[in-house]
Image (cartoon, rainbow over all chains, first blue to last red; front, side, top):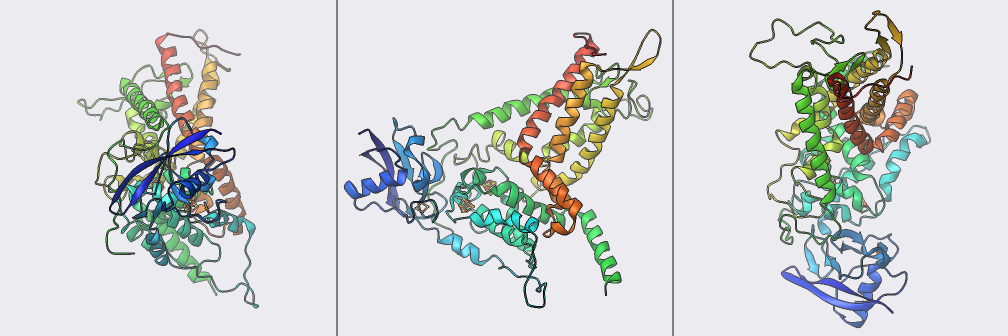
Length: 254
Length: 268
Ligand code: SF4
Ligand code: SF4
Ligand code: FES
Ligand code: FES
């Protein structure tokens, strides 16, 4: 059976280094299989987080040969096995041990996003009506499995550590899902520029490239949010027209 | 959000990465092609000559507000133009399509990588620690993209008009104008199609036609327009590069004709 070398980062928050492990490779294996095989046979204390092995839970995020990937969805047949395969933890979050890192910051960010606030019901029985054309845009965003690979690759977090001023692509997806929802009546645009830092995103699309759910994060979530934010802050013409419409609407209303 | 700064691993050095692929190829390609385009278009714009031939007008010079070709809207160089200031019809108008491309969402992402290494490529170490993003001057001006879009839409109309004019050839001997079709007509027509694809796939246009609405289904025409622009928008990068290449080629085509270095082939 052919073998391959895996160069796995071992260490904790204080520091660490890569260690090489060789293991057998069989057809259909993914990186997570190899890591678990190494854990079972050679490194019983190797910390690795995983759960579903099916690309659904988003726990096995790591960097494989320098690219943020789900280990359970990265087939060894896609990788050049003549060289060691590097496996290291995500770099945008504090390290705990080996491949496990502390993604708790993301959950704190999530709490700061204003929740869904539906408009008053459309029908007397307390229900709403939505057209497919209006919901389909936000359906894409609901595929997110919170693997945080997009957060990891985003240079605003990874290189510039703007965790206090910038919520990251995953949460722009969440804001977009709420903000563009046809029933939602909440306004999240003020925070978007001020405390959530949308202006830090320089639309370099790394987040879109790594998303295992193929969510078009930059084009469908971030840029439309930037445009809405521009409507509010940089477009006096639209503001004036909106004001006129509001006045006209108020005058002719019931 | 936790107040304390997160204990993250040391950021990587400039260019440092564990990536195995040739990650520098795409940003280098962007750098070379964009730089070549900027140098050529600046040179061509400052020439102020050889931008028209017969019924053809180079797109770098259209609309020709003031100038010496038959395409000029308001006659030759205005008398009030300061003598110390270089005059070229392209300089009067080229800032608009230039600004449109400069502030385009796609090009921004591409040139931040290719020219500013911010980041050099995804998951590759950066040269600078300091980062302001598009939050402050001058990059905050990128938010003016939609104003350039309004102008770009007008330019599409003007360039379409140029294609119409490029169908009417005048005979130098008799002075009669006849309907015809030359390779140059096709070159200018393809240019309008590609620039149209680029302009109508713009993210700002997508927002303005329908993206700004949460309930777009109540406005059926806008709903249709939103779908069309979204469909084009999926290929915005492709439109951006194809139209960039072709607009430069259109200028070269007309310039070569005007210099007599090649001749136009007439279908009829
Ligand atoms: S497009 Fe924006 S959010 Fe996505 S990785 Fe780049 S800077 Fe980060
Ligand atoms: S948007 Fe994609 S990459 Fe980001 S957390 Fe969700 S699934 Fe993962
Ligand atoms: S183990 Fe669940 S996504 Fe990989
Ligand atoms: S986003 Fe590229 S032209 Fe508007």
